[in-house]
Length: 312
Length: 312
Image (tube, rainbow over the protein chains, first blue to last red):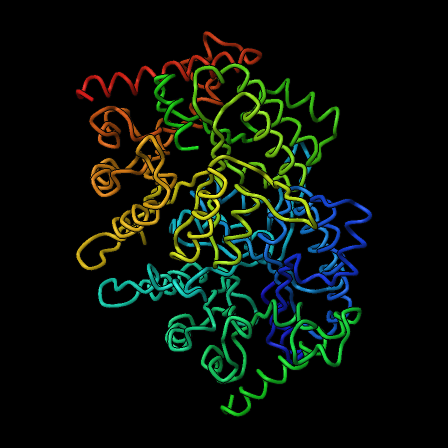
């Protein structure tokens, strides 16, 4: 799967991923009303609204982007109907040949991580049949429990040709409270980065990158620079571009010299583009998906421009 | 909710919680066959099997225990039908007046943690209506992202009278890889423990305990002792007793002098008791739930005995 993702990034010249993190407040009023009229002001109504919202955005953008990253919390908040909308979104994106990165941040003790890995990336044996639960292509994984919490995911990556992105340094303001603590003269995130590289050694794809990638927030460019050196074979998934404050010129050091090695996520900046002053003049609410398409094109130009400018 | 939990622990003299972590291999063959015959060798069949299994155990044990702790990964592995079985289990346990601790180990950046908190403990606003997603009483939370990943959960605890248990030191063999790293002369888990105490200050219940509790594995008794001193107002949720190797006499230091302050979890040891040599002679597969009841009684005696013996 890492080979497929890298090939798509190269072919489309788009080291970007669209975060399908649909807050109900992002859904245009007309679309939300329609869903709530049909299903009531219920979890089902909300789930239908975010599914219709996602579908329109995917339809408008799928030919431009290699991957999507649905944030499961935005679905999970709507209970079972929300989870069903998540699954529907995953399946639909896969039918459009998009690589799907489930942003689930799971991670637990060994046997429990094995269940998460089976449910999100692999299969479970039920009687004599193998069944898939959610079946994303990649998921994000929290490393706080150490090797035996991560290894079951790596095993499934190997068996099923899937991948993971480990949280190494997150994009949020207080990520440093624990992640930046100095351990034997270096920050904890570097130790986690070294472990990510180590865990990833056994699943290197033909493309040269590991099926074990890493999450490093756009909001800490100096950290990105250091981690790029430590994790040479990790594809770096970079959240925090745009709405959270990360700028394209800060991100060039997350890439290798050949302009590959990172994939930058934007969620709100793309899916709620029509609410942004930069697009709302040109695109009406009804054309929200076209605004998203334009925002993808602009993001691509912004990032490729910064890479070219820096000589990548 | 922390007041309710503490009152139930005292009334039942049972500082214990049953982990409803149903592996399909724990479900007695006759029960599994019945479910798979009705629903096929499908996710629905597996979900039905674990739900029937849970229900029988809850029916057999609910009067003895203050709380249950369903591990969501064991349900999530069966996709949407599995999640529906999780929700059914949560609702059923609440109808039996059990306190439900969702072992979900969620945690993300601020806005995303807010969605998890709303979905698992709180409510979401859909049009003019407030709706509940999963509605557990407590959930476990991963602290790796720091204050802004935890705070949204604390806010919902305050608004909705719910609670959380923060992962401070987990029970698995490699938990030390990151959690034990020395930071300014003390292990990282102590720093996390101090933060748990700090975050919990604003939600102290009438019982004197905070709605922000902590997870500290039974497998590291010396750590439990140190953390008990640091987190005076935290109820400590202790996984790792029994099947994972934690012994009752090791756990006395997780409690305060008055014999309160910790709640010990057992999952496999209770729910799969009928497979254990200690019970399989007396209980047939058909009486698996009675074996679980006996295992609860034995666990209670074991822990209360150790507490009495140590003068607690």
